[in-house]
Image 1 (cartoon, chains in turn green, brown):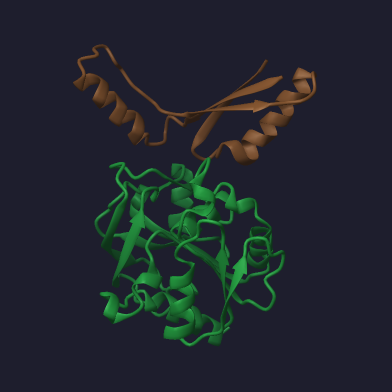
Image 2: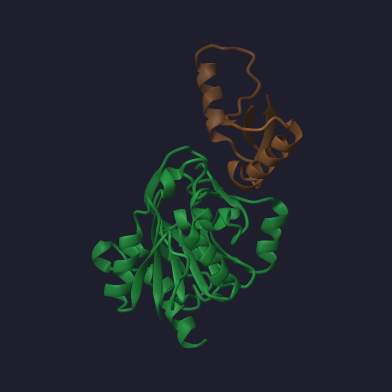
Length: 222
Length: 79
């Protein structure tokens, strides 16, 4: 599986994702600079965490208009895989590739901590190596991770089985304990927790690997 | 001409910043405060004199970039 990791001014989890995909999982991976207009032969795009464009205006608001994001939107429309982590999730929401928005944490604090996540469905290219109900231990690091969408949107997400991950103990006030959702066609996934920071036991846990392994499994069985 | 744009969190959206400011005001003994909400003020300098056209342009800018309609409302004044 060929991975591409986007880089915006202010991205800071790009190298972690690059390391995990290349060194830990042994997959071909390259960086995609935000000014690039095409993704080349990339099959799965990673929109990494960080503070793209200094979080100016709103998190992800400026990044979504970059040339690379236009290419990502076209890739997503063509059925290509996209995973947005933390700031990447915020960018995908701003780009309308996922519904809703991420706002300031309920307690106003930036939270950097390990959290427990419940896998709600294995029916996605991002969770197919998990069991529904399985608990994953993965860290979060965000000030604006409170997921918000209108009640009708939440009902639609629930009805169509698009909530992939929920917090066991909601840390930030997210509606319906939402930690990660996918789009209608299930090829675009956004989540606030950082699987790339939990992919090696030496770093405290490797539950994040289930997400990457799911993507590889999906590609092998496509 | 100038566009003065106020962007506010929607009523249905949590505004923890507003709540915290309200609590601070109350702890400073400011009484009679029912609610506080914190938003943004954006000033845009514009060329051109046609107010209606400028308003239309700023409306599109607010919708696409300056606000997020999922969580925010906005008000534009052209002067």
